[in-house]
Image (cartoon, rainbow over all chains, first blue to last red; front, side, top):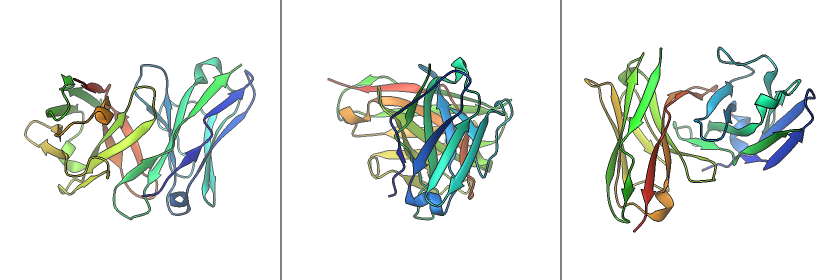
Length: 109
Length: 119
């Protein structure tokens, strides 16, 4: 099975822009989806596909992809954005198995 | 409104078994992919299993042969039978709805149910 690699921790100053990246071979074939998880809560889908936000997700969240790297960008980070972020994609074996990145802890300073 | 409500988590001894349940509302589980994702304490998310609308099932290598995903269409409920439990299976187990395709995503999550494997 494939793997997705994320930086363990990233920090951003309040109101600034931050990019969280995810690398893996499966991203050459499939889009990443991104999940926000706050302590003691279930994950929440924030970005999927080319750059799609589910209803209720602020437009400061955006996604992009190039080669084997997917990125989640938060433009104008808010204190409420401090959380763990996980990327996910289908595996490369062309069945509905799936793989998650190890997660990135975002700190808003 | 879509809702997923898990139950069945417990403290169980190594080698034991449990059946986790996920009651769905707002959509029909048999019409889509449904999946289980787990998270060990202080660790990241791990994909566990998926069942297609047609009933095909797939598993992570770490649980293959020990876990079984199924559903009861009449109850609109997803299940995960977990057997031969090990300490490393200790985790919160989330029930999710999975949308497939090139832009796949887990668009709805339950609140999770905790399985603790310990003697």
